[in-house]
Amino acid sequence: MAVKALLRPDILKLIIQIPCFNEAEHLAATLAELPKEVPGFDSVEVLVIDDGSSDDTASVARSCGVRHIVRHTRNQGLARAFESGLAAALKLDADVVVNTDADNQYCAADIPKLTQPILDGEADIVIGERPIASIEHFSPLKKLLQKLGSAVVRGVSGTDVADAPSGFRAFSRPAAQRMHVFNDYTYTLETIIQAGQKGIAIRSVPIRVNGPTRESRLVKSIPAYVRRSIGTMVRIFITYRPLRFFTWLAVLSATPGVALGVRFLYRFARGEGEGMIQSLILAALLIGTGFLLLVVGLLADLISANRKLLERANLEIKELADEVRQKPALRNPNRTPAP
Image (cartoon, rainbow, N blue to C red; front, side, top):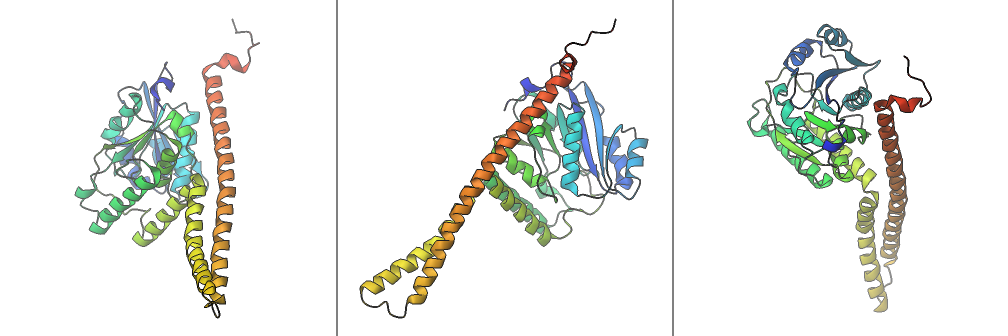
């Protein structure tokens, strides 16, 4: 999708959103680094999402001049905070939304690198590629897992994103309107897979990082992070390609069943089938399971098709709402302008 033509021609607004949870200590430094002007945009605004913080995160944001603050009454997790930010940014008429972290790990001066491909109509989503190999505070195991994880995401999504877990990314308005985050843990992998499955143009650009300010709250345990990331990728793949997923499971189940059945028939034809009833029962169970998995896949595919229709209808409603906001006269065509 070429987004340059879809951006509002009168004024271009960039909103930089920052999901936060108990970030009072680091937020001020992060906000101070944000650019006040970005080439190609007439205005740059900041949106802070306070995800149920128990400290003074919201107060720090206000004291630093942030006018747009979304507050969750309880902590809902990074994915929900990210989604709340996108929704709020769209209501604020953002043409492009940049997401960054509150701990100032990403170099804010590289925001123009994220937004330029969108302004040029080359991409709908741009993800900052960190120099993983040269980040000193990343352990060798973490670097390896980052590379392996990104490779898996590329395979599942059909994209060429180099740094899938990077939270430093930009979304055009049309792309932001099409994002639906189902996972409560993180949005990073899910949005890439969604973009690939929906045919949204996505690319990576190299960016710089700052030194660590605190331990990662998302990766508290490498095994737990890997387990939850794999679960996220499987769930999203099932959501968007259910028939393919369940067909493979059906084949894996039915193939040994067919082999056992053929073996039984061969032995039976030679008069050697006595005592092999267990093989016949197992073959029937495996083939039956494969058939049931295939039926489940077909039903899931129908549900997936219905969900895509609902997403398309939802997108059309959002686009219509945009048109109404841009043309106030459409709200009440019979209204007489005040003198």
